[in-house]
Image (tube, rainbow over all chains, first blue to last red; front, side, top):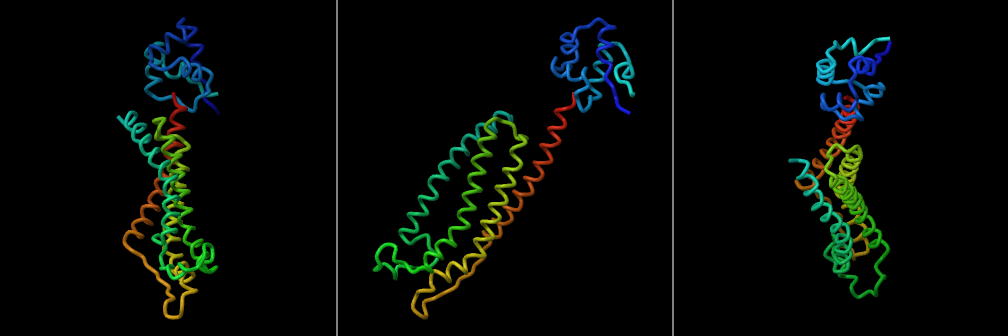
Amino acid sequence: MEIVVRLDVMMAMRKIKGRDLAAKIGITEQNLSLLKSGKVKGIRFETLAKLCAVLECQPADILEAV
Amino acid sequence: MLETRLPRIARIFHSVTVASLVMLPLLLIVGIGSNTALPVNVNGYADLSDGAWPVSVWLGLFVGLIPFVFSMFALNAMRRLFGLYRSGDPLDPKAAPLIKAIGFNLLVAAVLGVVLTPIQTGLMSMSNPAGERSISAEISSSDIGFILVAGLMMLIGWSMNEASKIAAENREFV
């Protein structure tokens, strides 16, 4: 089982650009891109909480176990 | 604070180590030439022409240079480490192996310095007349301190290796 990041889906649903989201949660666009593509080892709770707050969703809407 | 202090201090120590790497071999050559860097008195050979020292004296000289060579390796590793720290990243992955190398070379130099002194003095006084030959062995508190510091450096190197691994892993977290 692995964890898949569904951030791009949530971003499309909320109609928010990567640049804006990165600025709102305080990470670089490059890191956001790595996160979207799942090329990171992990995500901090702090980053996840900010993502959920900005995208008005739950962690399960962003992360999925497949 | 560390970000600004580390490169500044590293630059100073880098210059000091470069100067030491150049000066120490020169000082050693001058010391040997003037007989002040030798553990036994070889002035008895002063009447011999240049290069006419007995083979055992040359061997003794060579044995005495072995710890010095390891000290030079340690100094060179220090030069590279300070060069690395000039960039301001104390957890650079290349730093830990250099710290370990410094500790290892200092440890070898310290241990060999203690172990090889009897061999060196024995060789250098072998050609002296009977009654003037000697073997000396000594271990001082500074030798023990040197060995402890070298061991400590190696341990710090291992710890830094672990720290840089964790830092690298942490960088992969968003």
